[in-house]
Image 1 (cartoon, rainbow, N blue to C red):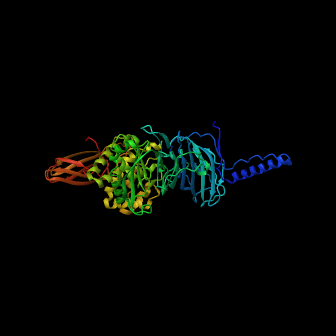
Image 2 (image 1 turned 45 degrees about the vertical axis):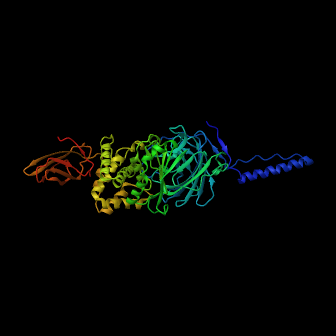
Image 3 (image 1 turned 180 degrees about the vertical axis):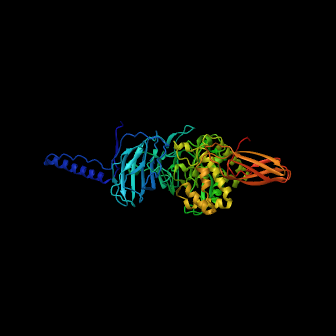
Length: 602
């Protein structure tokens, strides 16, 4: 058992002033006694400081990646804003933090306590205020990876403010360690549910909030976080916020993000960086945050890796401009591309994308990853999946619009090559038997698969082919515009697609999103009395549906290519087409509009 650590609330409190007055009175009595006035009275026992911070032992952490129960994650609660104050130590990895959460109680609130996710760190003090009332200390037990905060006197419709003081060594989510060059730094890495390992929150993508950071770090470090840097880094106060930080050196950095974002993209990074400006004013479109349309695009690397990393990022400003023109204004104040200790190749943290330190140190060309993560700023960060089972709304969108960025910057050929690779990755993956909207994942990390990424991208591409470019991109812009800052489900996307196109997409959504697999086609053709006869058969597993789709075919003849169309609705079709001249070859789906796999003819 770890002995409790007690810290007072800090100098200048009412209690401190009361004790000082009692000390003065004691000195006066001592002077009187020396003149023959009798012995001084016994000084009173000091009363316990009600604002003292008392840390117990760190609780056992819960595993990361647990799949939440179906239904609303925290019914009755709506997080509005987090202020996260964290002290990054000069040595070791023990942090001390104060997070203040402002949470609205919705009409669905039934009087239950507020359970904030916090795993493996010891809580030293919890205070609550209802509405504009005073902060009151409450007893908030820790259980099952949560801090359970009672809300006495609150009612549905109220807003409560909860302040939690906590400390310990994070088991996950925030890593304070040496980088690959042996230099110390600190990086958050929250996806999917690992924010809870370093700050208390409603750690689920359905509940987005604005966020501010107060980060105390060693003086030689620079700190990057979501949002705008407020002022310049300053020398710390002696004790820091809420009187719980130990005295010491360093600097305090303050960032504010006034745009709602999911907890899994709320991050800080701190290290010795070389910072390069890629573009002081990429044209991200006009918003309340970017009144002049300017988005500064920067690259933060470890100093020795600055040169090797450059080649992957020089077109990042152009990618921002491409997405802003295609979908809508860039949703954040800045775009910082940061070398970090993320476990992923890239992590789309809002306005502060983290990339693999090893990839950048080795000078690998990761421009496709950069395009993917930049696309995420619109889809995943600004518009977020409300349920992990709908992750394709983030990863499928980022994969597809990463390819669209290349289509717009380079050529349709570059786009087609990427989509062909995405199809091959999906066909060869072990998850082809999994529906895109997976109702039964065993682990949230299992959702990072070729169904959500590559098949999700192809679903969007097939919708584009079904609707045509004009309606498809108008629907994408409208979907983004109506849901920026919100969390959504696939049904929200379907509604917009149907309203823009006037088409019933329910059969399409059922077969491509809620059923496993894809069409595997076996095709034979022959020339018969001036006609081409084509035998088409779907030979996929019986556990997969019989897919219905529009199929274009191209006959290569001595008079040039001849195209014909068919509606595939059954497992097998015999199709007859009049074709001038004997064909030499048949090409199915020549434009690559459908996710089909070819099988040898039977």
